[in-house]
Image 1 (cartoon, one colour):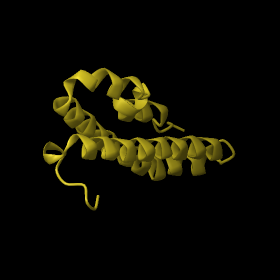
Image 2 (spheres, rainbow, N blue to C red; image 1 turned 30 degrees about the vertical axis):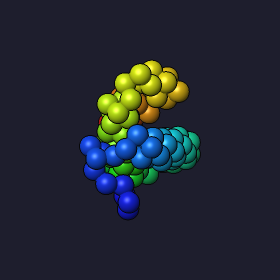
Image 3 (cartoon, rainbow, N blue to C red; image 1 turned 90 degrees about the vertical axis):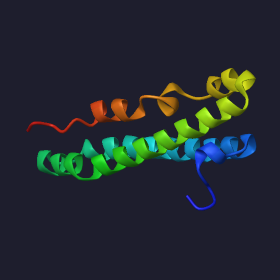
Image 4 (cartoon, one colour; image 1 turned 90 degrees about the horizontal axis):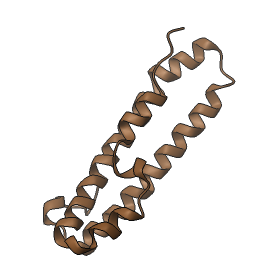
Length: 113
């Protein structure tokens, strides 16, 4: 993103700032996927299948990209301030720190109908 710079060059303040940005974006992506799931309930089998094959993979890929960026920012902050590592990770939901893509992919496995 504009103004971000490489994670390995970030100061602690910058790493924490971008950690917050990516946390917010990931939360939004998860809400988008939840809303898609809600809307899919009322769709025909054909419509639902098309959404599973087109829209869902795009949102899941975006979430994965932001999860990786978040991981880079958390990692940089930990390196800069190891004594705060527990605090940095303690307030993060597990799905935001690790495993979001695997979790989302399992939730959105295309139907076979």
